[in-house]
Length: 218
Image 1: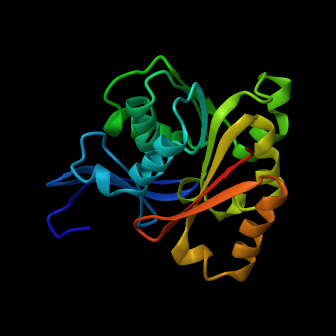
Image 2: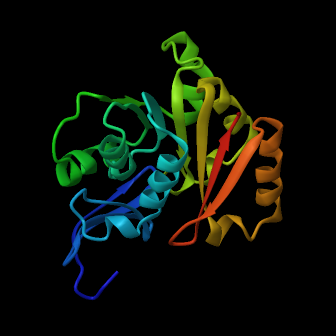
Image 3: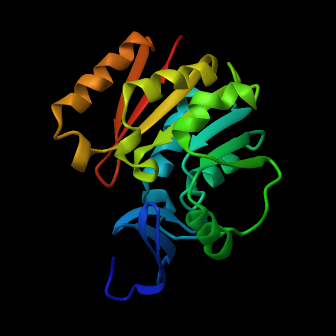
């Protein structure tokens, strides 16, 4: 955050305090003073961990038909998926109506008919999705971003269920904050335990103290 950045909106929500800022390089959003997303036209988009994630995916995948993203943020990742994989259709899970309002008012540039937003608690969605949606072995890509969801979702039970959503050879990406998670040895033990469910795991140490964990079965 620069001294020239101007806070244009603040609100409290079930996740904490959101602040929307305008800067010389563009608009961005923080949650509890932590960066969580940019406007699609922000000049620093290439410097974000979202951009690193997409660059890695492009090395591994020729196409993405269906993607599932836990956490809306400012839709930064989803916009990059659409830009780099034009054929993709994206389902986003978000339970905070305040964040959805912020996105619609401050960050949405157009409606994308290939994106579906499901307003749901992530745990409840994973637990009960089969009662409503036919998402078993459905997605080429699943992304869980703990910068958006919070550490409450950092559980093996939750992440184990994620594999049910993936097609064979699908990719699961886990986004962790190194500043808070890697200092905890239990976190790295958990990353190691992912090998029980996936036979290929790659770690990408990205920008802004972010660790991205790419998991798949060959």
